[in-house]
Image 1 (cartoon, rainbow over the protein chains, first blue to last red):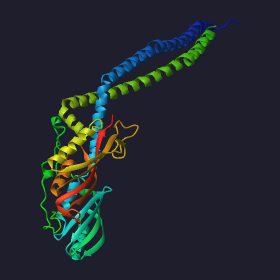
Image 2: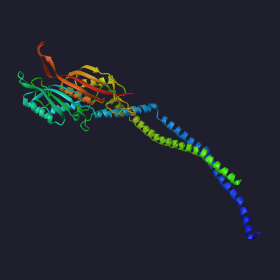
Image 3: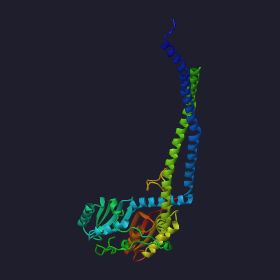
Image 4: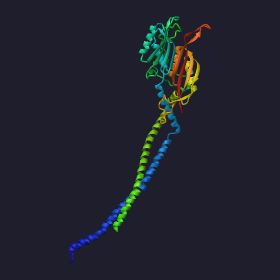
Length: 226
Length: 194
């Protein structure tokens, strides 16, 4: 029995599609393969050398940049920076002992004078003094204690001298750092010195102004305060 | 046959992808990382060098300022210079210096608190002058004041003051003189180490 004409046509069409399908799959697989090869070649022989050249160029620029500041300039700048930084640190702790002397003159009772003074340990003053009466010593110690510049007062060796008809005493004062350190605005601490006067020191005029003595003439040596 | 050829292509594509493309891509990524790192480094270095050059220009133009800084903090001990300044101040204030002792220079680390292996700041050097002498109270006070405000930094470390005593009659008991004192002062001064 012969097949119907319609079925024969369908079979013929199906067999004619088969070679197209196989070439399509080869084309698809081949395309993937060649695209991957193309990507590899692009990365390996195009982008990677480009990146390497860019990297070399950047490294060269960085090296050139490093040489743009000479070693001597670099050293002098580091030294200058160190000087500024160290001066800044030193100024914060710079001791102005003469401020304390001025303060002592202004805070000493009229009937008291000092015979010895020493400063050590950064904040400790040892005084030996003479007073007319024991009440003067008491007033003096009270004045020290009341001052915010003194953190502690130790009184010792209070004795009456019958030959001189006065009282002697020793006092140890522990200072607050505020009285020894320079405070901005209090006075100008430095004056630049011309190089030509390197051997002649300079000072601020304000710093040399004397403070009037507050005590009366001493029977011993007529010292203003001491 | 065509399916077999397609299969071969697919397998070859996979092999190429995993054996060639992926390692190369990884290398390229590494290179890009390096390049970006170098780029950032170069940008920061360029800014830094520009800043350094600006500072250098300022430093070179401000020669007087730099000279003043060097007077306050000389590069090197300059003991003679410091001693000359002290003697000059003493002479200006009628202070009679009777003795000077200079201690050995030493490197100071604690005062700045910034010296470390990573800090570019060079440490300070310091040495002390132990002075003994005599003069009036006002002279001594002015001397101290000028020492403290001198362009080269001097820090008073110790200070002691006693009335000067003289014998009124040779062999008799000594008595304090009027407004004349013996003093002993220790001052520290500093220099920039190289």
